[in-house]
Image 1 (cartoon, rainbow over the protein chains, first blue to last red):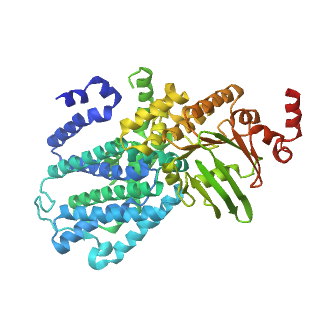
Image 2: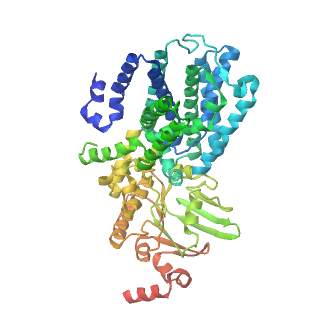
Image 3: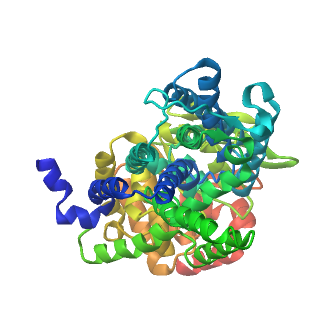
Length: 336
Length: 245
């Protein structure tokens, strides 16, 4: 009880609102999911949670560590394909397939981090684009395993062991649980030695090295963890949509969207990817639903235009735009 | 000896940036490093701290060979440095900057915070602890470099122009801080261009010119060495010194 009381003390809520308000916020979303009946809105909710997961995973490398990846589609795709192929070819439960895919993606991501880690800024981003294209082509060509560009349909048979459900509400709760897990992991990271080291490396690599930070190693660790989590998001996508193809999960577009959600929300903050997804995902889906039919491509034009406005006026993302002045205020009040 | 360098040579293509440089640093002393621009002073710092690997020669920290070690390993072994062009972690607060240094010796955030706060008081940045590093003035940034280095609990600290770009008052404050660091038991190796400052504070000075060590000794000897006057100090310096005395 003492712990709970401290968690909700007014002082901590002001000082660290993310920690103290996260549990009530999660409970609120759990309630919302319980009340939504309309399948379209439920779909929007699930996609919000999915993109929040994917963006959170990207944020660990792209946001905290400053390794601006435009190739996370590769890790998402590896996760989606690994669990689906293991399920279809070997009848392995997608839960186990998810772990397998995550480990494979994590190891591959670490190798990428080792090879490309010495590339800075844009050059690293270019290398990751090349990487996602490489994995995309591999996915298209390995027809016996992946069915190539035809895509892979996952035969539906509901059940907990199969990670498939008749009811969308179950997906929403699983998505919420995953998202919460990713969020708390990010918060823990932020407050750990590794978190401090990642941000220091992002801000100045030479200064970081001179302060005993083994930058090549923490690059491998951060992108490895990032790839691991992205692959888990990939499996969730596959189990929900039940159809994957290289041009969605293994694509450059998918990779850009993951980065974009985080940039709008706020890079290098645990909350940023969630905020970004809660804004962009419904916007994208509603625009497509209401404008997609009338004039082909109009929804993309409007979506792109809104993105330009957001990035132009709040380049640091929404969370940073709110938090930095708030921190200043709190410190001037001598609370911090 | 804290540090012993023997015949350290570093080339960049055809240019010999350091040519068989040998010197040693004794525990508790302040050793100065002077020389004209391009003499190889910062190259020497980069070579000691593992940013560059010398072609030949040896560098020993308390008897242990450190040539070939990476910068982060060199720091773990006990050599900390500051940069001539300051490199603050701009989006972190002053306290967080210092904590990054302190985390090199611990995994525990509260312990790192304690060390950081103690060292921030020491260098006089405690009041600024919650400010983002990007909001600091140049003299505060120089102190931030020093506090990060101190937080790694080094055996030896290399200061690369800690007084460069500061005004007269700030230079005096920095001199007091360096004196305070020595009194706290630190061993320092400093590059400086402000002659009055370096002459007053150093126990010994070595002089580099075109990568070659041309003089070594106590400040007085070095200041009157004809080679040093010719290469770096200039005749005006001697005239000014004579006028003073």
